[in-house]
Amino acid sequence: MPANKTPAPARGEPQGDAGSRPLRADARRNRARILEVAVEVFATEGLAVPIDEIARRAGVGAGTVYRHFPTKESLVEAIVRDSVERLIERARCLLAADDPGAAFFGFFSSAVEAGLENKALGDAIAAAGFDREAIVEEELLGAIGKLLRRAQRAGAVRRDVDAADVKALVLGCLAMERCRAEGDAPRRLVAVVCDGLRARQGR
Image (spheres, rainbow, N blue to C red):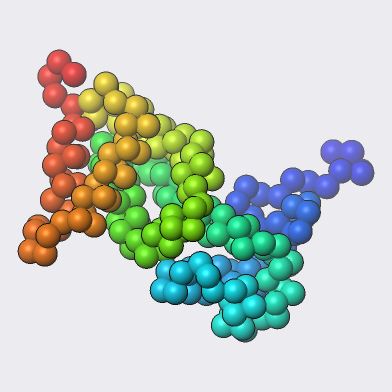
């Protein structure tokens, strides 16, 4: 490697202001704490809460927040990315599973669960006009696609669906689970959809 080049940081590692070098340990802790507090505050109180209040509750100075997240939009984007990157990382880990079908259906269920757990935050982000899907569309679809194709090659999932179909089905399950009447069997729709995705003779 030429002497004047800096090695590229590992994928997913938090970067400095210019994205040129990894953050120090204390800066990583501050960033993680800011995200943790912002998720809780935005989910319970909405996105109108000012950055200075996020800083106060996180126990850091406002300048620290602005160094990591210059605008509220950049903070919201980081929250969305953090959530989805957890799903993407789970998908990548499942690519090594012995049973491709079980890995795919397990991921499908966990994606719905993650969406349900983040309902309040998701509603706040949507109400503020942020396009959550556009932020991570390509990466998420890529991760889903790899799991899906592996399961299809193993004969566990029908071959006439693609990653975009799976993503749409996850969103559909989320919408229906949120609207289900009290007393309905929880996650019933997830089970129905997963059954419909399973490979049958002739498809």
